[in-house]
Length: 556
Image (cartoon, rainbow, N blue to C red):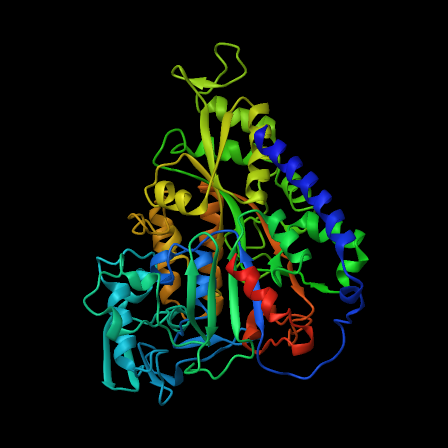
């Protein structure tokens, strides 16, 4: 009830604030033509917003999207994906794969430097590989790199890795590992180092300042390995509430945010003045939202209970009610419509009768007539834990209502992101979570589903263990034939579907809103999305905020 009350209060505050903003616009701002074509020029500040403050800026340790989004502007990988999702060199000038598919030799670009002026060499790549594979490094990503049987640096520009057997996602993995500076991190504990709060990287930007609870400011790196970005400053403000982010967008205090469906589908169409200065985009990303069970807690170790809950949840109701239809149903852990998504699988239908049959079969009956099922004197009750994300909170409310209709008592608890991850996810101290997975382009999901990936800080925090899945994941990593690999991952998805360790809820559309002062954005978006060339975005001087007002806004 409190969640719904807060939601309606937020909407009321939002609508009132919209009226104030609309009434306070100056004639000068209304007259600006943001659609005018202007030449490329460097300079300016771009401000975006994120709901969660990063726990640190070493992506392999943080393992969270807020950290990765900022770190991606600071650090480079050996390879990257271009706008058409084809691999190309980033730090690497070229690479060669041996005839037996077991050895990859990377040649680095010449004269690479860290932002502090020190040389970036193959020794830094080797150092980073040693870090990510060290047993003492608390990272969920180590498994990919532990498959390397030998890593060496024949010279300062060459990094060579050898695998004991062909590893299909090998090149993709080297597009995901951000290289760290040995000269600053040698002999430090990577899990606790102060470097995570004050990093030195090699990419387009370097850290200017980090104000706890407020924002992170990046400034253009004159020694960037990839050349110079067009925009001088990137500022990421920490604004947990999406409604508050939206008010800041309308007040011209931020330039970029991801809209929620209400903002995208209802507020913008009713405000033609907004479309004059803000451009909207829509793209289906590589992510999905789910409800996951802690399989080490009863009764979720019983597949009948998991399936019953799956049948009890109306997924289309969530897509229509929470996303206003701006999402796709999901039935496998892959982006809908892609090669890896099994076309033979369909979401568990909403079937409360089937749900009750399964629960009764598992021994749950309402013995005392209070409307709640129980077994051995214990009611079927648990807590749904999520972070302060409105879509997840609203999804949890709809789930809670449907579960109550069949006699399950579910409570909802919403937490700030850092506490949510640190206190509950990394420790495994939860019953049920509503969360999302952001996936790589390669279908390998060993880190998420293999039974070996259950240690604290790793991604299999729900405790899933299935020998058949383990075998399929191991096969998929070493199969180089695309068609055979597709069959393996379709079978893997089918086993997950039958096991129901999670309930797939939806794949929501990303709905970026970007102020039209920002130019150079590809539209329509290429396969890699609109952000693929953000280093080429620019803000013409005539459309920038006054520098004085920006400094005042940032320093508040």
